[in-house]
Length: 441
Image 1 (cartoon, rainbow, N blue to C red):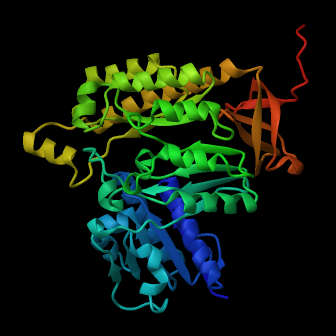
Image 2: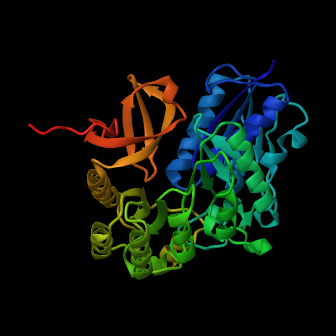
Image 3: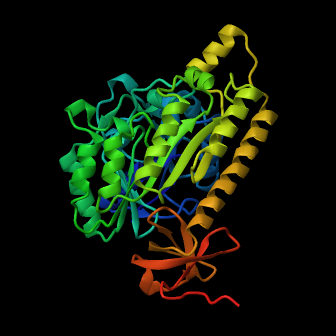
């Protein structure tokens, strides 16, 4: 039986697409083995969101070649789409596949036999119209379902539209069918993934809300989460629907990127901080206990110390739950880099970018701790995961609070009410029996 291994870098969308490739190999009687073990074929799905991500991709490619010098090495993903020639120059790479080609892998590769010259199959991203259905799971209880791909926005720091093309969506009927399939496979929770989910359905006259309503009716799926949605696309109607729905969790993740309006303008974002604050207030009005996550970028070229302080103060005052903090990375060909070169401006020094990142990481810890503390003593439903770590099992409440309890295999995949107890050393909350009420001394 031939053996294949996979390595995925980047976002949940990449992981979903890798899982689809895995199923394609399994259907052709390949054995999937862990990356690093002897394999006949190795597929590496890459990311290009930052220079560091690209460096990690090159490092993983060279590691795969070093560990399995006779393996047939296939590199695909966003980095492969944007800079195939860089990857092709790495000795030992056999095939480089673009965004469209990765879903036609078996049609394009005649045999997995090494040749002297690297084969490159990367079509123009402007010609990409295919969707490429995909879903994946990190463990037995939660699945990530791809509903949308590509992006029509032109944020000045971002290369993703060049790597994934224009926005396109999976039809509602096909998405609902996949959700039913996942329910039959035993999954209790689905996370909806995409590049810009709020654009869902625009090409065939549907909206994201139309899809959410249909998914809410799928029997067997007890939880849905929206992975991320732009604040200007998160409508009052979507928030109100989540507040009243059967299965959509009180959890939103909205990218902010900067809390300074001047920087937002230079980033070409389609909202200003006032709209973002209004969206947060609307969520809090209808879903007081909701988790609200925020993406933010530090060190963008026009982010002076004063403008960074505007971002810090804005985030500090917002009733949010946690942050995902990213350090700005110059991406060749983006408007931000071209503008800086044209104007002769100075980038934010990298040590200062790191300092700002650390400041917001500390703020994120403070926000998450306060959010958890505000819910201690409440009884909330938890979906228990299959992973065991040091005799403990973990799960998330409906509003995305991480909790732990002693491992019990009978609870895996079950949703049960627990009382949120004390903080554990790792920052999670200890789950207690809902009937247990501590007696003070």
